[in-house]
Image 1 (tube, rainbow, N blue to C red):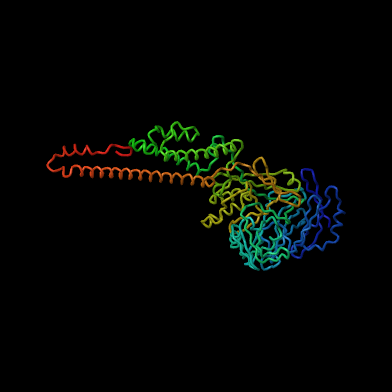
Image 2 (cartoon, one colour):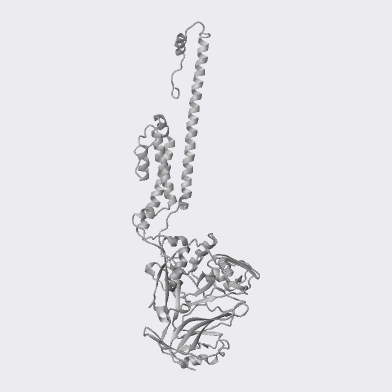
Length: 596
């Protein structure tokens, strides 16, 4: 039976869909056979393609993209139909789009089931409804799938599903994985009643996964013996071969994205402090504070102590510190070796500091640096980051041209406010049910930071699926892979569907890098060590000088006593002390340099 209906997209394209009825014993539904009558093509062209196709048995799906037909055979175990939560090598999940013709209504539905019936019964889910009378699709119907109990089955997780989130290793037939996604799958298994088993075989086929194979891996025969990988950079996942293509039939599509923009630009006054990080500024302030405090304390002590450290010719030591910092020549140089060495080291320190500061300040003044993105979910909540979602009636044309898109804004909330917004704004609930939010909620649920995402290096976050835990149910929202963001706002301009020849584009912000303390740490420690050694030499010099003077004075007194005893033996008998002192004055040695 030949059924036709017309769907218009802004009056630009008209798609005529030929529905051939094929009855299934259980559902009695008709499969979408093919879509034809694209502009410039006739239905005969497509009928010739289908002449050699097997009888319709709900085991294949045909996509039409710009009049190019792509066949996806769901009964092949080596083919992943869509970017999904799992790749089930031993329990293959079939995922079919079918169209049910029910008098005045057409139901765009999907069937999901497993090859092993003990794990899950087939389930028919309505995605959208087309009214033949009004020639419109229902815009209110959400596109979601609900997974039920897996009855304790062992599901095989593909390694590439965790490539950006953790690490894994495999020896012989046993595989293990760790990281955020691995732990998240284990957590989901508690709700869905399944056991996790890891499979790393498929990840060997793709070079962009950056897997690190050890020497035991032989790529020639594809034999997996010892494979491990560890990806540290978070990146947007894009499958090399398996992409979700859009129907020519319009249906409700959901796109969720968290916009993590680079932040506001720094002001000209804030740029004055940007060249160094906070730790470096604190150490510089402590250094100058210590210098001025030492000068103040010494100035309160007697002049002899002042001369001991500075020398008698230095009258304004604080002015010397300020002039050295700005690179001004010294008016009066200290004469003591210790003071001169300290001054030379301080001049060298200020020279390096001024050079680094001026060069970095010039870079910041001639550029437009922006504030860094948040490092955690809590910081995103505190800074009121927006979560944008497109929930719209989508066809192939307006996806590609960015027409008729609606981006409602929602504020990221904490877990106490989450359920209230979920209930009061159910029409936009899909906009905020992202994996990052769920990781944050799991973090609160478990009372630790196990699932907290500590770093978001990219200014954009995209998900294949959205994990929602609500009333012990698990939903998997299908995510639209066509994402056109806006470069002027600092968002990644990305088109992940490689079948259409487009590729991922990242905005690289060439901002000057701040000099952190680790960059200056080695030089600072050398300078500080030289100051300590110089101070130790100064103390040792003063101690040796004092000991030498005491020794010379004692030696002089001993010589005087011996000479006096030879001239006046027993002169103390019967004479007054005053007469004895006059006699001793005769034998005093003349004063020489170095003697008191």
